[in-house]
Every structure is written in structure tokens, then in C-alpha cells.
Length: 337
Image (cartoon, rainbow, N blue to C red; front, side, top):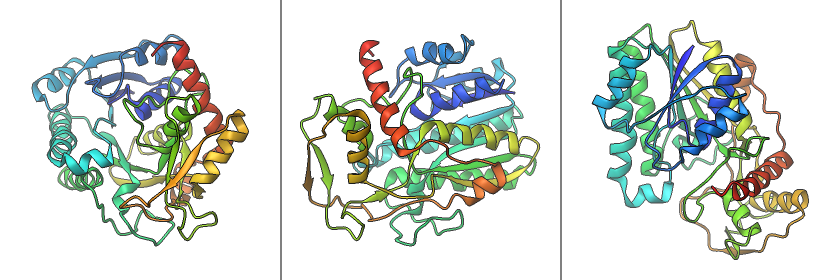
């Protein structure tokens, strides 16, 4: 297949690109590089044996430029990763998120319709489940996103369902991620946030490297084994594999399919910190602070549907996540990214 990856130079997209290339697909990346770097393309090619990924710098809000890419290539499928993703920023800049994430997705679907592209895999998020304490989250659990970022994912899911209802021969696959961490085993691609990290693992890594003084752990009195929040952390390589399996499973299907991609078990913040210390031999200085507004005690996936239908099973351990994250960071500094 010829697959269009929107946001393909980003953290998740780049790892999925490698999986697609290793599975024999041709890939075209469309990315505006607002939160990624062009050098990722060269490193993807190196990992995949000097493949030739095609790159087009493109903002999905620019429909005319998007249409030129669809005119240039005959895509068999689209994987849609492009979008802003910082929860905190979305609260203060909601219009920025709705315009970029939702309008960009609508433009993408318009182009697919015009150029007769029938398959799309969408990068959604467990944030669509909201603040419920009824864990694990199943694909049929109630949806109640509580911040603008999560609502953009929810709105796009609804748009995709309506799009598929109106176009019965289209295949829509919605993949709800839990907490991706880790990096490619080569150490050539990984999570590369700009500024102060928002997510736990990049923050741990920055403290380990001396770029941040201390890790702030928000809350120590939750109803969990050690008092800290519990989340479903999944290695990005396992997440990437889920995309190729979903595309292969449903390549001849029509309809709308939804899968959780998580390990199906919770890991606490302190458990993550202590494992990182043990695996990498580095002490992480941390302090407890007040609970963060909007955080729930426990969140993890029911992943049996992805296992039974797609044959997908996460293989990487918590130790792998910590080891690969640190390897990537060290290599990125050597490469002067």
C-alpha cells in the first residue's frame, strides 16, 4: 500500500512509519514540523535500511496544498497523527486546538473523499474517557472528555463515524492510546518535546540529565498502593505495531472499528521512577506537590479486543521503556538534535 502519514515526523508517527516500511508499505509523510524536526526522516530511512520515505511539508489547514499531495500520489490509506496534544495548553488556547485538530481533520476527509481514498486509521486518545473511576476502560465505556484537547479527539471520532455512515464503503479505525513512552531500540528516534516536558517519562529523563532539578510528583495521597497516580504506560514500539496490524486486519473491510492500545495494567508514578533508577543506575531527585487538577487516581485499558481481533499483544516491559528512553536521550545529545 501507499500510506499517507499526517504528522509522520512526530513521536508516534515516526515509529509507525518504521513499522510500515518494515512491513513493505510505501510511505508519504505530511507534516508542518511545528513540533518535530526534518532530520527524523533521514533517521527513519536509516532504521528501515535506507528506504526512501517521501516528505512533504504541509499544514492540514491549507486545503489547497493538501489536495496537491493527494493529486500527486494515489494513496491506499491514511494514518492521521497530526494535531496539537498538550492538555494544559489546550485549556488556555482552546480555539487554537479546535481550529488545528478539528478543521485539519475535516480537510483531510474532504481530500480523501475527492480522491477516493477508502481507509483511515486515526490516532485517538484515552482522554476521551474523561474522569471516570470505572476502570479498566473498555471501548464501550462512556465518553466524557473534560479538556479541549480530549474533546478534539472526541469530536474527530464523531466526525469519522458520521463520515463512515455517509460513505458505507469507507473503513475507519480509531485507536485510543493510553500513555506512550520509550523509544526505538536503535536510539535514533524517540520523544523530543520542546521546552519543559509535559509528560512523566521525558521529565524523568530531563532530571536524570540535569536539565531539570527535581521531578514534581503531583499528589501522594491517592487510593493507590503507594499513594501516587497509576497509569497505563505502553512502549511506543508496541503502539506502532498495533497500527500496522489494524491496517492489515481491516484492509478489505468497511465500517468503523475502535480499539484500545494499552498494556492493560497500571504503573504508578513512583514505580516508574524507581524502575528508571534501577535500570539505568541514576538517582532521580523528586518531591511531592499538590494534586494536579483533573488527575484521576487510576487509569488503564481493557485491551482484550485488540488482542482477540488484531492479534496484538504488548511485548515490551517497564524496564524496556525506561532503558530505551534513556538510550534515546543520550543518543540525541550525541547527534546534537
